[in-house]
Figure 1 (cartoon, rainbow, N blue to C red):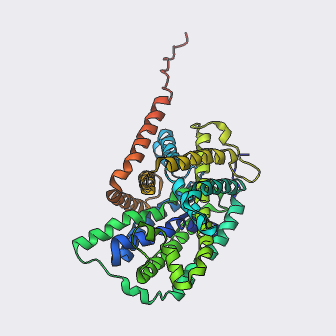
Figure 2 (cartoon, helix red, strand yellow; figure 1 turned 45 degrees about the vertical axis):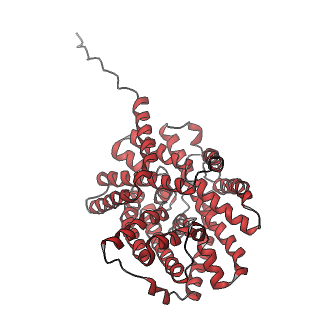
Figure 3 (cartoon, rainbow, N blue to C red; figure 1 turned 90 degrees about the vertical axis):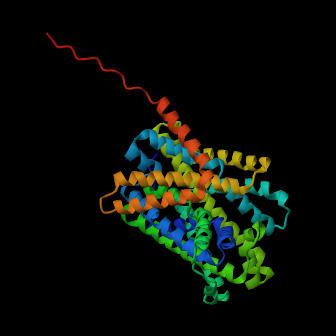
Length: 425
């Protein structure tokens, strides 16, 4: 069995989009942006949203026109050939070495709050969380989407409740527009951090093949979900700034817990930890599903063994999921033993995704209609603008992509020289 079950509708797809973008970033990014940009953080989020919307629109246009589990690599392959498609696939898989381990460790940290254990349990909780996510991925997309729909309802309800009891209208007083070069620099610098919130457009693109009506439903799911995400993050930015639950790295990582404690009391901290864990779990599980679809697509292209093509009775690429799980396991253990800061892994992830987004926007110039082409140009400009704020962190992705592309060129068979046809006497 190699064909995906078309089980997703616009509402389920929208729920998946929200859980993709609102995950571990929800726990730290609003506070980090306020710490960096101060009262200008609201405008930093708006600027980032303006830059990400044309990119999301391009992915929606490509995903509805060319639904494929290969996502961005498939679009790039259609525009530039199979070598680039496979190279992007390798780049996407390389994110497994730096990305999921961070999010899984953040989720595991909330388990230490729930069970009141020391930080020494984080590694064990990380491994248990990974096992749960692999099971989650293997049971199939339809069951996963139902679970995520419930998570989204609870998540949005909690944010609305915090807005109600946290005086969201009064919090608008913290909004201040930058007025000079230094303030604009401070605001724009924060967009480099906020960009991490929107990593996941590529993952959602992998799911385009599983929508019942991808032409209609995929754009609704992606763009509608992003609109909900932007509103949720902007609300939390205002509340965190208004109630001063931000500061150093430790305070920022606990900002939402501090906000809940301030508005609802200390007894709500463990209940909030349960919700935070569920959000992080659903978020990273979607990434694992996306990575697994990428493995399955690369196997179809011949870049990986054919054994990863098959799907189980639930329509999930079980063997691909196990491969993704094994690589993630190595990443978790490495991050624990190396002692490297999580910020390093986050920055490497940002750079990899930005290259994928940039190449996709370039490919869109050849694949989309003339009416959408101006949006592709705007999206490409947005990607180039973000490069300025990610900078050296893109070196990891550039090296991986260069090596992958060189490998694909070297292994490609040379075209044989055809003998001239001899005339028949």
